[in-house]
Amino acid sequence: MGFFLRRLSFYLVALLFAATLNFAIPRAMPGDPVTMMFANASVQVTAERIEAMKKLLGFDEAQTWYQQYFTYIKSILNWDLGISIKFYPQSVNDILGGALGWSLFLAGSAVILAFCIGSVLGIFAAWKRGSKYDAFISPGMLVIQAVPPVVIAMLVLFTFGLGLKWFPTSYAYTPGTLPDWTSLAFYQDVLYHAVLPLICATAIQIGGFLINMRNNMINLLNEDYITMAKGKGLNENRVVFNYAARNAMLPSVTALSMALGMAIGGQLIVEIIFNYPGLGTVMLNAIHARDYQVLQGQLLIMTLFMLFFNFMADLLIVALDPRLRKGGK
Image 1 (cartoon, one colour):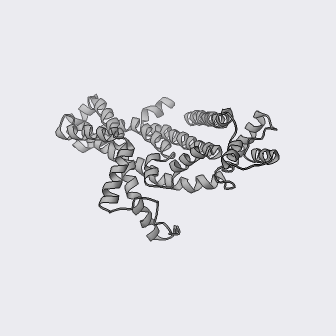
Image 2 (cartoon, rainbow, N blue to C red):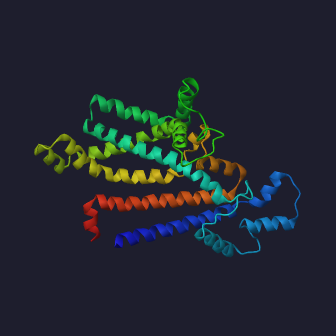
Image 3 (cartoon, rainbow, N blue to C red):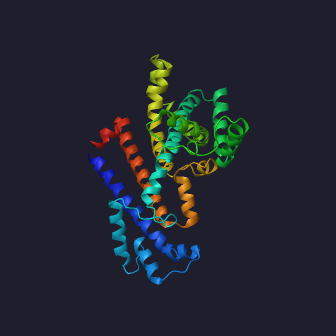
């Protein structure tokens, strides 16, 4: 419990610090988003209307900076992320809420698939190090990881989408279809449209998990308890998975948590190429429109997910490693 409370306190302080930066950075930039919004629209507006819009969007110059800050913190606690500048009067909650599910599905599934595939491949690469399998799979995955994501996405798009025409090349489901989350046919349509972006997002990340697991395993294979397990004549699979892989998994859990935390930002390149309606596409549009409200909301969500998954990783590592539990006592 002491460990849990210490880590929880640390992450709450980190969240407050991130929220403070999120508040300060847009206000430290020259100008303000409201003035730029009307300037880009090339319309004449009264000073009163500009001031009213600034107050609505949280840039009320009549308030001191600390009054604005406490108003901002209060809005976070109420989960009121404001109103979008680009899509006014649509709320940031609605915009990000509509994209969040798609990014969780695509990017989250890709991270979990890449972790499972990469970890299994890395385990066998370490156990059979120096073999033809290791000589092929490890450099091969490193080559794939070194290829820019845009190249992989374009190759997959032109090969399986435009060339063979096996899968659709854009959108999360068939255009013109009304989402029906009670229909099995709609789920099948969503999965069908997700195949190509999911392949790209997964392939990009497998190499990192493979090399991480392979290196962790190699460091453990010369430990005394592994030698003893082999000497006792235990089954090879039991030695590999129950003894070596379990301990080698600990650093990989941290890497997985980091990847899951970053996944909520969306696979930007993949989402753009396949026109997938996730958070990556929303962030790109917000940057182009200088929509600070949406950017602040998305960065806050990304921070929350990053801290949450790191916190879960801390707890999971303690659960997996009995030495840490004893140390905590």
